Image 1 (cartoon, rainbow, N blue to C red):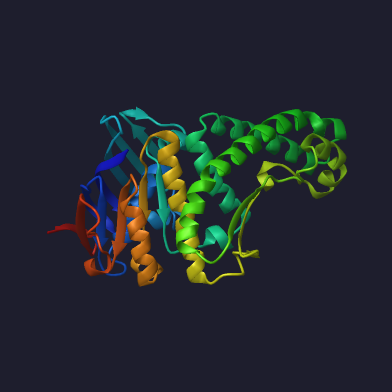
Image 2 (cartoon, rainbow, N blue to C red):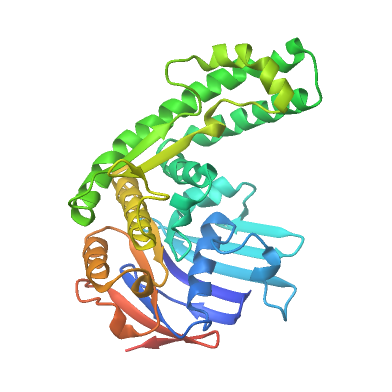
Length: 359
């Protein structure tokens, strides 16, 4: 899977832009605030229908316009070309794939899988558990076709139970959703555990290269004690759940525990090490995606030169050059990124929202 062509209209400072990348590596250069990160952000939006920089749609629409538009052509691994279009105003979103309306974000994510590494990616480690659950669930979603439906069923049951708890309904009423919660939670836990087990060899190989003298542990905590049945907890802790107004245990409280030499990666390593570690977590995920699905994904790496020192930058580039994916990199200067390991490559320069090819 890769991006063949992208037309951008009124996305941030990119008023009108036509982009034709190659299937290998694409380097986009330009000064800060020139629009190079916005270009990566537009590609990410095509897949996720959200930005990796902001939750505010008003930040994405050019201030001179009332809406943004992205029109792309993607090519599948079987060489089929699929048109993809997004039109987004402040109040309305329209998405079409292969000339048909798309109703669910999950459908477009399946069609065009995109991962991103950017200056705020370290928050995967320092941020809330929900960010680490999202990391885990991206991988599960793309390799386990049943996961999305199961997760939706779980969320609906959880929402109903929490509403009953919050409104102080009686025990019998609050317990109506316990079986659905337990059944879906068991399945979600199984899929997450299986995914992390399959991801571990890729993590181990990368960690051995970048954290040679340190032990890196990535461990999954399912959201309730391993020695206790969730079915039992839902019953035994119902009184406390009613007091709190929410369900205390379940996969919605899961966590990915990341440690280096026995210390939490949140506090025990430097910011630079956190950024390297997050990059490796994403690269392992991209590698596992290719092996697990037989498909290639798209990887966006924003400001790699500024995020890593020269030694780690060279090592990361060596890893990237061996991976089967379409890669988009940004840098201020062309000289900051060595592309000699790639056969198929293309360089672009962005200035004041305008894009041009570099020879």
